[in-house]
Length: 339
Image (cartoon, rainbow, N blue to C red; front, side, top):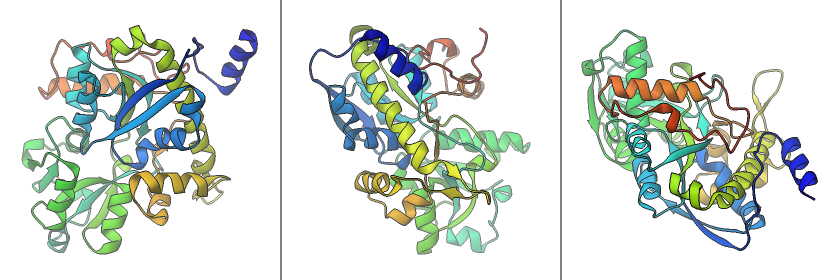
């Protein structure tokens, strides 16, 4: 039986084998209600967590940092969200550890968009290349939004202090600020960016993947959870990767024209995502990010993120990127540094 189980895991691709869970385990997962969290929602509603004897509860937050803090404090056992300077500082204190990928900004796949306010658009902000000198909204220092704007400005030879960055604390505050014209531009997940554009509440002027492709998000847990309840984490990962494979089959195929082709089962998965994100099916279809079908990470990119955050005094110099990621749960991660 053990040989058969190991063979099944190997054929399914890349999961490291581990012990079974003896009895039902309650697991709280902190997350944002975005389509990028799709695998946990799919695994929940298709019974993949239940099959692993996991009783999963979601704790929905309003920004990335509270998602990480919930895991660090023990209020949640796992979390899934974008990677931030605050996250890396928590990882440096051995409070959280990355175990699998979430969404990434992959060329050709729209996920996070740059949205200009109507007022700024009418005044000439019609492209990403015109963001220099503008008032830009984000959540907090070291957020995913801060990182992308920083790398964008760096690529173009601009200083980040040439823009006025306003920390608005929460994602809903960002949306309200750009709708009301209090800021010139923000970044927004595609379901929101598309909806705002369609409703005339802002103007979509570009996609992040066109400028800053990167490992945007990850699934993580605490080192304590890994040490004390590794079978639970392994069971969660098995269910999670089964869901990422479903997501890939339904949403990540392209036709000869380069356009997304929706596969068998896509309607079922969209209904699941509608339940959790409260977005309309048409918006979801236009907003699905790229998610690695086996949960693999771009590891060097994580090292690069930490280096950028250190250079900008957002992450402590003592943070060791090699200790931020636990590569033992999934095989085949990309670009793993030699040391």
